[in-house]
Length: 368
View 1 (cartoon, rainbow, N blue to C red):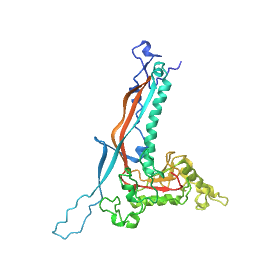
View 2: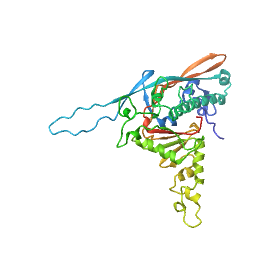
View 3: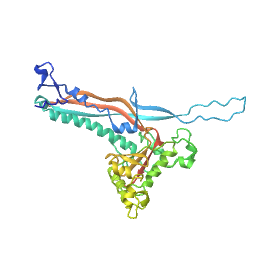
View 4: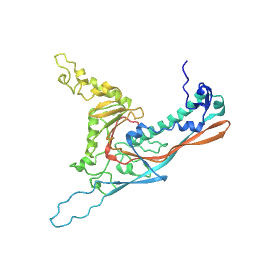
């Protein structure tokens, strides 16, 4: 005999005979749904630096800029005192919620499977919402989203439009038409680093791919994105692609003009396709490891939420986005009547890209 495994809405009655074997007690619906609180969000772990606040509405975050530097001084003199330059980012905190209900009869009739289905769907709804919200903020979808309040960002979007809080509270990576005079000045988001020229620092981080069809992926686009991230003083670590782009990446194994037989196997009958997929080739790890691999040293992450018209290259050792949490997912009891009992879940948080140098978005296709 195999013992039944208790579900989320059942518990062993330890005070009964035989330790409660075979006897189950219904636990409170509100307590049950709290067990479904989503605390592990992979998208947030990848992109977001989590912060908390005691107030709602708009939150101002102060960041320092690389401003101090050594100067040559005459012996016996005192150099001028230097101060840290600051930049402020405003994050809009909004409330999001969902009401989850089941009938009293479902509970009274011990129909735990249907109750648990409702709880599972509520938990998944939070996960889907957060993942979709984060992806739309990070990738700058082609079309504006009224539900989230995101705007359309592409290679023609000016930096001024990206940073205008009133119309785009989520910001974005570096946009078009940045002036060299803005580097290291005022509230500009562009900072000089190393020996990079002004022309390389003010390049647009949203650029059109070599192929203009959804799902197209060219290695030179990835190299360009790596260069954009590197010019800002960061080293790209991840590339985020859609399933359509992953197929294109695997198809690169059939395009062998960039490789020679010597790169793969030896002998007159060497197969150049095999050479292209051999160890050391740019696509070898991705082709051999499934949906997660390595390309040019970048970790390849495939997710269906990534648009088939966008590819993102990021240095995720430094989080590009801030997640400001006013209140985590909480549950309130609700009784709307008509035999319905349930809970109302809500959370208050805000998202914003505050480090615009650490990512680059490759755009292809006409819809996002």
